[in-house]
Length: 177
Image (tube, rainbow, N blue to C red):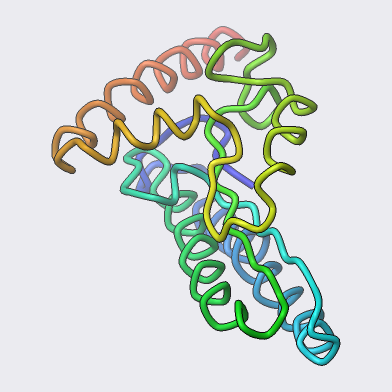
């Protein structure tokens, strides 16, 4: 679950419901499902858990602050579990993709930085035993480059990019009304 469009946290419509729904969907469900399946996997000394986070959970993502926070939980939770379970026969992976063609991303046409879901799945399945991956080679490059930047620069860059997406979404929303 994510935002309808990038927005500052204080201006999100139906903020209280939005907050509760996003935490239930992106945090509670991951922790609860993991709690349900992990004990049996550990008993059998065999298992694989892939939790889908996002590159947005790897660092601050202005205009997607709650989404970023929930995805950050998934990333750290999964990597912590991976360290706990590695000697117990259970692989836990934090899968942190960038953009993929989907309704959620709003991207309709595949490109070098936004693969189709099929391309992304084929690529990410080749990395299932790695505790952390973006799942796709161009996402790995993007993640590497952004990680080199000081946080204040990446914040400005992300704010600029998402601010443009926000402006287009608001323009479209205003035309529809």
